[in-house]
Amino acid sequence: MALKKSRVEMPVQDSEARKSNFDEVALGYTEEMALEEAARCLNCKKPFCVEGCPVNVRIPEFIKLITEKKYQEAINVVKSTNSLPAVCGRVCPQEIQCESKCILGRRGEPVAIGRLERFVADWEMEHGNPEVPEIKPNGKKVAIVGAGPAGLTCAGDLARLGYEVTIFESLHEPGGVLIYGIPEFRLPKDIVRREVDYVKRLGVKIETSFIIGRTMTIEELFDKGFDAVFIGSGAGLPMFMRIPGENLNGVYSANEYLTRINLMKAYKFPEYDTPIVSGKKVAVVGAGNVAMDAVRCALRLGAEKAMIVYRRGREEMPARAEEIHHAEEEGVEFHLLTKPVRILGDEKGWVAGMECIRMELGEPDQSGRRRPVPIEGSEFVMDVDTVIMALGTSPNPILVQTTEGLDAHKWGGLITKSETGRTTKPRVWAGGDAVTGAATVILAMGAGKAAAKDIHEYLESGSADW
Image (cartoon, rainbow, N blue to C red; front, top):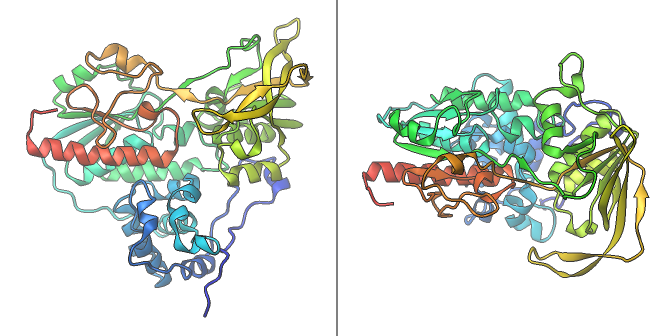
């Protein structure tokens, strides 16, 4: 019997209905769907898909177990290298990672690896507590700065190896960008909390509302008996365009906007005491995944017009194709080849419009994308009452400022050895957005995993060399 060229489509919530709620959009595979999709896997002897996974999930192995209806064994295989499978199954850009390497993609659609990962993770959540491996303590202690994807992954891997691990998180709830950045309709917070609980069950302790660099320094962590420190503090410092009017009421960074909505439940105001400006004509500047999250949140908060404003064209948009597609289905307007030059205000200091200029694409720049060039005389005013800047973020400088010997690039990212995550300060490792700037969840997890491996090898060897 010939294999199907097309993957099994995953059901989603109706686009008209979902615009007015924060319920999850993608509904996941049924068992029947999962079995049909898993049957498409060729179980390759040389699985290129594994090479495309930053945390090296044994993909053909877990998919074969799905075909045998051995779902617990399947999720155990996934979790042997990935502590956050329900998260990864929802938000990883599999299309440019594991799935891009799938042999089936050469003549049809690749196996829906992410959807199958989500299926087994959700199956386990519905059928009892996740299994925890037996762990033998080794007597060594590691401190983790930040309870986001990089920190949780590093902590989980080290805990399995017998380390006493403590995560220090600056916010009042662990999860990092998973809890404050990604909206409920893409990643339900109960899913994140269950994944965090699993890491805790491995023996990891989490201290919240604890700012390393303020509450305690890295040097003080060593004084407390920690043998190593991993920095996975993310990149929470928002970037702006530095154009006139950015200080007006009704202008947000996407970071603040999404944090208010996701972590502080602004969409449930006044049940949750977190006010937020709910404009009727909202412009989000940028076209990455964060921009898509922000503009789709604006719709759900009651915007009559929710718009993406981006200075390049559609092909250059960095957001996942799936997120762009969902935004279009929901009625988001895309103003491409458009660049804001000034935000206009009324007499009370509120946003009353945004002056923009049309762009055209020139030669490629350092990013490989064609450089946008202004078209002289094409200025116009866009009718908006709320502007959200989704232009990326950079790491907070507090750790560099309070830690002697810890060096960073001029733009803020910590300087590390890419293969190991070793920083310029002995016994301190780093990974994720704190090193790269804003990137994907799975790349942060991969960095946390690589650092955990090197921390273990370094502490086991007893070497003083750095």
